[in-house]
Length: 229
Length: 229
DNA sequence: ACCTGAACACCGTTCAAGT
DNA sequence: ACCTGAACACCGTTCAAGT
Image 1 (cartoon, rainbow over the protein chains, first blue to last red):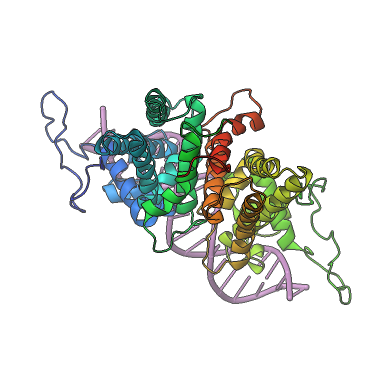
Image 2 (image 1 turned 180 degrees about the horizontal axis):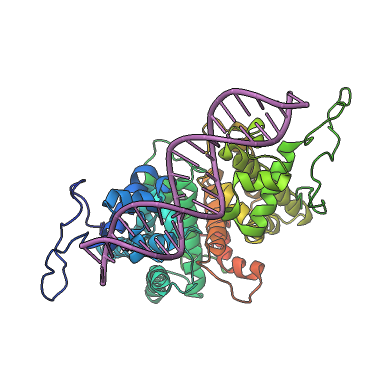
């Protein structure tokens, strides 16, 4: 699932581990952390999963990394910059998961398309705090945050490509693929957001079955042979 | 638009105005505020519109109302309770706006349905901070917040009713109206959220035209006569 | 080059005390 | 009944100083 590689790391003694990783002569004492930037992102992810965004203070992440409250400012301009880095990794993980799901779904384009949407929804439901952060106002979009925006638009490009392929195969009706991508993203994102924030609840029903009940109507609208709009 | 009635209020001298408004003997000095609860909600709305949720601290709202930082705790258990009250009013305003739009749209059920969706999207885009607050994690859903949840589910009930009417009129295909309501809400909410958070941008295109390009495909899927799913 | 310690201006919340 | 003042434990951020 392209999760960040932080799983079994020991909780204490987070100083002095992990060799520099860059070429060049090994630093003598290599006092201090080693890779505080990486440790801050991993720590933020752990706090997000355990306590949600409410517990995610810069000072708490620094504490967990074993450094002073001021140390993170060597690596991030401010708190927003740390959150942007976390969100960017989230978009990369989401894009990778969608790509994997498409590949695993086989040749049927409709099946692939559905699998990609369900992967998006599952990502959101399984990591609610991270999903909210990725799409929330804490992260400045567009404003000099190119790496972040790039990761986000890759996700969109995946969608457009899938629709165009479906049109060429005669499975999806003609029409502007951007409009259809926008419709798909909106429905899948809306379903995710409403589930994550508790406005919709699926009870004991499986997530995939529940979500498919709604997605079905969009697929009918996309299908070639439906009456013209 | 069922906006809160706070428009031209003077900025200073916010004490001692507004008579109690409840029956009973007029209080003698009626020292202090009069209706601090109301003033807190109005102040929160103004800060939300001007600075977004980042500027919305309990102390700032108290300052604006001309009371001490501790005074609000007479009227709200904590900050979350104030935010819940603001969100609840937001849901009521949204529901009322959708109802008005449906009434103004005339008899054609499809036109009505579209008008309701576009009203939702316009509400979100015109009051982004308020929209985010209404649907965000700051407000506890379901956890002993009945008045809030009631306002939210009224909005959903409006949708289901519209779909059932469309089915009876033979305009909408047979099927579980709850599923279709879920699909509609998801698409409209997703479009709103992605616009509000800046992931989708409509450039210079009018909001209604832009949103309709996506909504179109859902309507095709709903329409009676479309190939069965 | 990377980090610490102390400081500043903010928070949310509590609690005794005032009218 | 409703509000104030002072306090506590937190924040984000800055800045001189240390190694």
